[in-house]
Length: 186
View (tube, rainbow, N blue to C red):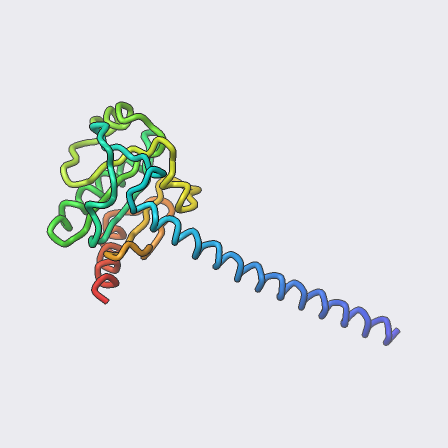
């Protein structure tokens, strides 16, 4: 009976150890995947043929003009109910930080410029947010998007500072923007 109990304990310890090692290996691999994904998404800020963005007028849109600034890049679509409130708050944020080397960019996911503009006309006036149309969903895919809306905060060097999935209110936007500005100063 003692041998059986000892064997069972040994077996449980072995299984527990294997599970722990498996979890550690999985965790390390996931960190490596996220690190690679961050590098890829930073590259979407560089103009290339693989990022065929346009603005609401249909002209080519690139992130080049925002180099050296903190960039707050939000993904949105007309079918996203949370995007309405967020877009209004991003306009307020963009106006508040217009003189502080911050660019707020809203990237529409896979909708035509006409559909995006028609939706924006029902939401309000946007003077400070920069809009990009991404018919291929390249940006969203590059950041591993899986929820809506999603926002990526970049420091002034183009490094991802924070990737926020889901809705944010204006106070949270300000908090993350301030942190990205502070990180850019370092």
